[in-house]
Image 1 (cartoon, rainbow, N blue to C red):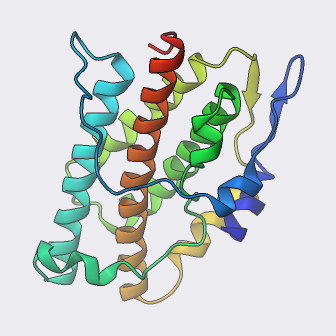
Image 2: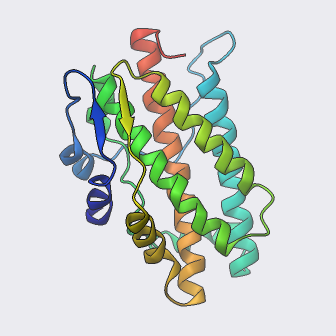
Length: 216
């Protein structure tokens, strides 16, 4: 998490008007992910575009994670929990339940957008280490589209600067070094944590929609 916070300093948010408050200290102490997808909560009618996209992404990332685990480690999916201790320095922390359960919609959306951008970069490592995947192009594309959908919902006009070449090199260098085993486990950890982050995101956006009915 410390490495992730240093990475956020490179994601400079330029806000026109009043600055959106940050809640990174809450992110360090308040986890939210349950590891399970949300149900429909009895809602009827067609789901919004973002919900359909996240549902597809969660399914694809889960499938990709399981395929990579079986093929690269030669183990059954039932043993996937035995790799839960493997972590990657730059994976974003779980979304803050406190932050995304309050009325501070803008701050929550910014944390979602920032986190997805970091995963967008980390997916390049997945591509380098697991190029045979037929699902990865779709996951990468849908992640990019989801970032756009989230940013479209922000009421405060903003520009999130891309990571500099040196920052990108540092992030990717951190996960691409090491033994073949370490690089494989980093791919697994990225996919696992991306799935958790998407589940958190779906939960947060659903709560926003229920409160304000303005997130489509």
